Length: 216
Figure 1 (cartoon, one colour):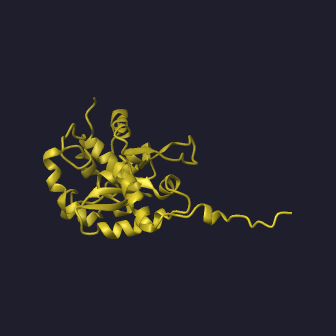
Figure 2 (cartoon, helix red, strand yellow):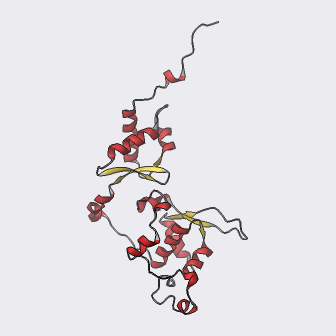
Figure 3 (cartoon, helix red, strand yellow):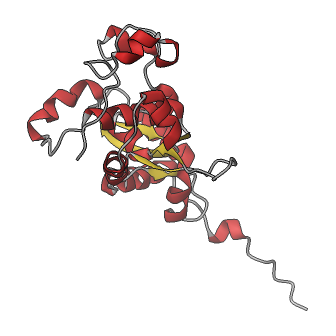
């Protein structure tokens, strides 16, 4: 019977120094077009690495720099510091603008998710065209959520990680509140649709916030 002691797994797979782990995380974040989760980082790095700890250290190192390590949903990415965004304006090309109907639909999904198509139409007060929803799905700013356990089992819509990333949000909880929207002039200072009088409802669509979208 051999008296040799088994070699421990720890000695076979000694993790690199934390400084090297930070370099690995930095390289992956820099090269990735999309935010990366901690689980994905751990899967890519050598056995025994602590991707979460390396991320925390890296985030502190980038604090106050022109590029920052930011959390996007449940993932992480390297992004330009918010206050330096104006430097990138000349390189930004606007391919197309969202229609008013698409902006309203996207806003409703963001603030009320998970939300069904019928609920979106109830809030807007008008029907939502298939083209509006398809445009937001194509942009990958919304996606299908779980079906409601109600008759017909309608699908719900929720915002995506791409939406959060585009608007610099960690989660939907970071969306501005009603007071902030009104202060910025992005929301009319009037009662919500469900408490409008009949006279007010009759004038909806005449320059109001929830105008009926035009076909096509």
